Image (cartoon, rainbow, N blue to C red; front, side):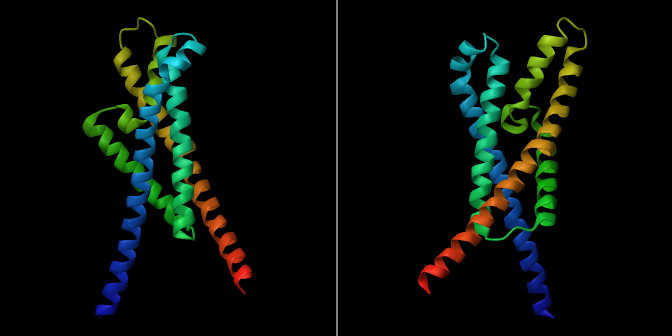
Length: 180
C-alpha cells in the first residue's frame, strides 16, 4: 500500500518539478525581455522613429523569444526526454498562473510581457482621443497577452525542449559509439 502512495507522490513530484522549471523559464524570459527593452529602447527608437512603445515591444519580444528558446532547449537537454501532453498541460498551468498574477497585480511588463507595449502602441495609433481608452487598452492587453502565450511562447518552449532532448539523444549515441 505504501509503495502505491510513493509512486503517486513521485508522479506528483515530477509534475511539480516540470511546472517549476516551466514557470521559472517563462517568467525569467519575461524579466530578461523587460531588461533588454529598457536598455535597447533608445537605440531602437533612433532607428524606428521616436515611438518608444514600438521599440520597447520589438526589443523586449526578441529578447523574450530568444531567452525562452535557449532556456527551454537547455531544459530539454537536461531532462533527456519530452512528453508533449505533459508539457502542454504544464504550459496551461503556467498560463493560468500568469492570468492569476495579472488579475492580482495588473498588467505590467513583468507579468504580461512585452505585449503591454504593443497594446499601448496600438491604442495610441488607432484610438487617439477616445473616451473609453482605458477599457480598450485593457482588452488589447488581455488579447495580446493570451495570443502571445498561446501562439508564440508555447510553441517556442515546446520546440526548444524537443530540440534539446533530440540533441541529448544524439550526443548520447555519439558518446556510446566513441567509447565502445
